Image 1 (cartoon, rainbow over the protein chains, first blue to last red):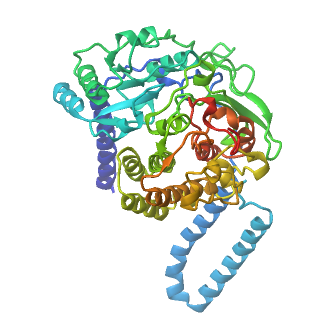
Image 2 (image 1 turned 135 degrees about the vertical axis):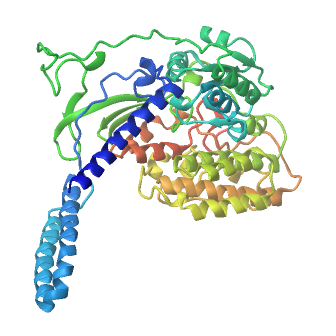
Image 3 (image 1 turned 180 degrees about the vertical axis):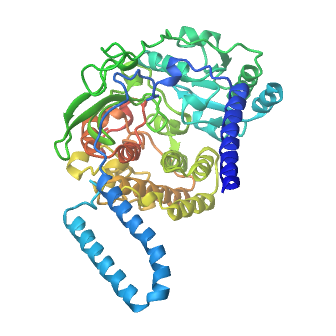
Length: 118
Length: 423
């Protein structure tokens, strides 16, 4: 137990050290000499009038949430596959019921235009 | 440790940002030079290549573009006479008939190796005030985040045209040196996220400053107004013009190798077989099929005298139809129907094929001056308002493709296009 913790700690420290070394190398090879004109967004030769931070509607939000829901469903199917080997038809029927319920959810989201981009 | 790396960088193709002005040489050919790597952002460049004279309205944007290059940087002025701006007097100079690539490579190597000091900023570099809110720890204030972040106000608010949500709207001027737009063209856009809410095209800065110019490949169209010109020469110039437009479109699609190939065929005189082979590759890439239903210009809005753009909208208006030199060749205008981005690209491809056939059929036939010339160059002022209307409501990527599909020739003399039958 302790040895596996030590190994994990070693990997973590080695990764952190590698990041620091790469950062130092990056600075040594190419020192950052950027001035303000190189830091603002370039739009073709005009100074930006407003700050680039702006709030806009993330329109793929509903689609992203749906994706996450079905992604989790796929994760649920991995342990189910092990159970299916033991339980057989009962597990298959239960999973079919689960998927049908989810499918109704998809149809509802479709009806509510959650899948349209605009 | 840095010296070997600097030598490696100095020997690499010079990353170059190209500012195109009024020049008698073929600035497109620079892209094909293996000694250079023409980049799409000044952030990736070491050398700023100013090709030709710039009108007064473009001098400040040119200076800001220069300052956007990271250090070490250098400038090369390619043209005859005095440079158009004071800061360019210190730049490396190349005459219009010189070899800009050699000068750029040399300036790049000198800058990278530290043998030439990096050019200072033309404008005043100010350290923006740190972003402080009204609270004792720099927090709080009005608006989304409070305070004035780094000296710039936060965007205004407006109702989103799609669903009426009140969100931020960015007012941005894009161009005249934004690589995805025709060089010299500026547009004002109101961006709701990635959606173009409203758009306005600026006037042609070259035309308003009396600095219109004729690119070398378009020179036969100018000569044809007053001189006898071989029909084959005119059609070859047309093929070259359309291939250059196609090369820009392919570049926007990210098909850089195919774009360079199209440009290579456009710049160097080649056989009809090489053009046909290129067109087959372009068709296989799928690029000509992009943009169906995007930025539709109706036949009524297109009207007469707009050449390729009008014919893509179904208006059979082509000055060659009334030209006696083309009558024996059995010329008939080619048109599309939909008037969208896809139709305009496919119209260009169809006209390249048509010009290939005309070249072969024309032989030594010569066109006499007098009838109107079918000039493929479209001045910006011919279509500013209708184009701005077609861009409203598009996502930014589609808007850029749409603007490209009109192939505006910024800097073209206003007399370049006239309705067919109007001398």
